[in-house]
Length: 191
Figure 1 (cartoon, helix red, strand yellow):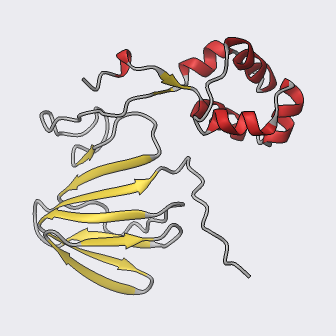
Figure 2 (tube, helix red, strand yellow):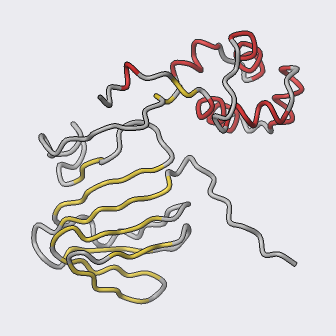
């Protein structure tokens, strides 16, 4: 259960990442591939699965191969369990930080234990939620200081500059955010 190797792949995110890396519009990829913009949009949003022939056309338009796109594809897991065992973080990374979501997804979540570089100002492209699982933190955002205790949450809209520090030893802070590779678009006001 939750084994990525047993799951089908979602190639849409890989197509979108490659297209954006080349700074191409859907219209340009459509012109190069001979496929329609709506169909390419459906592929990128996982609402359509391209045939092998269509995938090869998309790959050619993106100056890569179908094999490379499949290799960069996300597993189509709807369920993945990340166990607490070995909760010392990722090899080579800060042992006080543990990723709670594996792989390249639309959401990212991390658990911070203890303090971190409290003087470091952070700013993320997309929205995030900070939840104090244990202990207490002080978060500075929008020129104000917010003190949060166990069970409290703070929601930050994308683009808000902030910094935080643990005010109690062994504090555990969970940060859930829309992944940076996602272009979260706000609804435009109606006129």
